[in-house]
Amino acid sequence: MNNLIQVDKLDRIKEAASYIKSKLNNKPQVAIILGSGLGPFADQIENAVVIDYKDIPGFPVSTVEGHAGKLVCGTISGKNVLAMKGRFHYYEGYEISQVVFHIRVFKMLGINDILVTNAAGGINTEFTPGDLMLITDHISFFAPSPLRGANIDEFGPRFPDMCEAYSKKLISIAENVAWKLNINIKKGVYAFAQGPMFETPAEIRALRILGADAVGMSTVPEVITARHAGMRVLGISCITNMAAGILDQPLNHEEVMITAKNVENNFSTLVKSIIENWDI
Image (cartoon, rainbow, N blue to C red):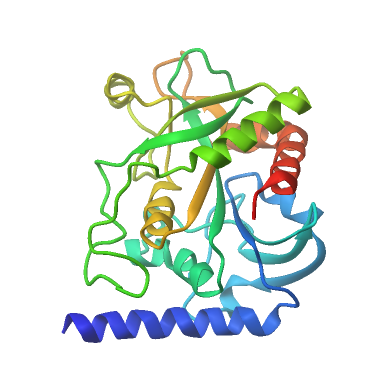
């Protein structure tokens, strides 16, 4: 039974990859996943081929504001890239295997490097909205594993190592780029929460005790799946608001979108330069 499930999953992944490949002019070297409000970066991609998620066999569709639901393939800073304007979240009602479907499709396309971005709430009180944070590690105790169920041996082992979920080499490249651009960048641990509700102040206090610097509702399932497949990952969080209980004010998605818009120039400048210096 497990073998049949494995084969079915693999066939669907191959079908989606084949469709995307048929639309491309060049083989992508880096995949970029753009979080809430960060999608406009994809508009800077040159020689762009745009594919709607709804046209890709097996692809879910984005249902959240700030997630356009388009795949943009082309070149930026001299590298062939494939960018996602919007991702899929567990809270949208998808099975966890659907949330990470695109990661395995990217691997099937021959992509070995991924840049994941997100909008996150700041837990570290030294952070302020508008900060950019390089993700050094993550916490995901409270969510179902994207590797649950029959292992797809073609991608990786049953029990993958997660000691270096985020590439130290890529983090170093990003730090050097930020320094040269005079962009103040933070580093920290990202905690994954299932959502769609924002966390309670008690949950934020608990996450701080556990060592989290920021919290969000995405990214971690994608990173686990990418590492399972032997892909290198660089993660960047845009701190769009302070997490629950830190400031005496309610949280809302509108604030997330406004802050992401305000940080757009710094974010785009940083990511373009990181891609330029990426060691393919």
